[in-house]
Image (cartoon, rainbow, N blue to C red; front, side):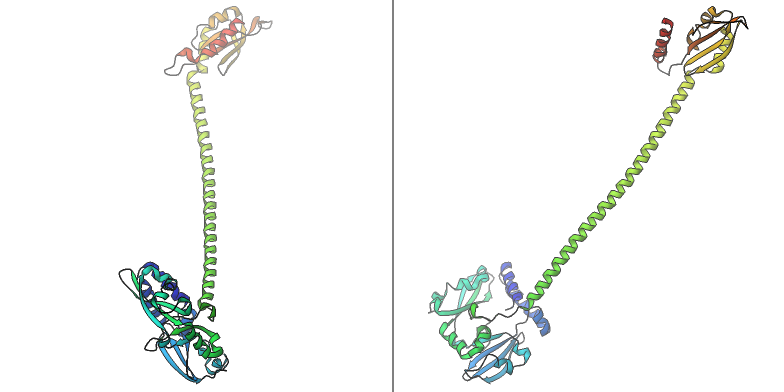
Length: 388
């Protein structure tokens, strides 16, 4: 049998009793629909050339999926060489695997009931049954076995076929040099049909190239290449996805940085505007300061310069009553701690004294906050100035 058909049989034996028979039937039915050339390519062909010695003649038959076909009988002298068949037959027939066919009378057949698990190693299992099932010792026969029936109770009906070694050796000797070209030896049933067994020892079989092996290697190479291409494609897809994700993250990070910078600028602008607004609202206006000064300064005093910068007010001018200026300016709500700064210098041109005076502008407290809480630092500075 072909390697593909044997694989189906082993797989079916593992599935369930009867499954192997189904796969064998299915494989044979599938092969019957294919051309002969395709059967050979996929290893489904069972075509073989059967050789049987009948007196001085060699009987030739071809077995295919469609049945047995008689080719004819040719004289077969004992001194015929192994190439004589190749010269007599057509190339398509001469290239078929050659099998010897023994008559049913030389073999002994016995039916044995076994567990279904024994189907996978049927030959090894029945090797221990030869002494019990046949009158021959195990070392005196060539044997093979086949599954006849797969029962629904988890058992199989197997058939053991044994042929005395002497009978098989005589049949091979009768074929002459052609015996060395045999791929196997089968035995016929009562109707003359082969039983699909191989009684020839494994060491003496002519090994033919398995037509499916080359395809198996090609399919294996294609599968490995497809797997490699698939893995490479997966890796490329992952790398492309990672690069795209990194670019997306970088773009979002740049946008986030720009948004953060704009937000900080906006906060700075808002805080600056709020600070300026609080400063503007809390400090006295220049008009109010000028009005207050005009009412508090004595008549003999006039100003040369009035400076309102930050929280400080600076007065530079001339007065004939410099000693009274501090007392006149104290007690105003618009400033605090008025004091002379620097030396008082007489001015011969005006007949008055030139003075410089500083004071701290009063800053109104924020709503809900005590007035002295905001002006503690300013008061401390004013006290320090008075101490000096």
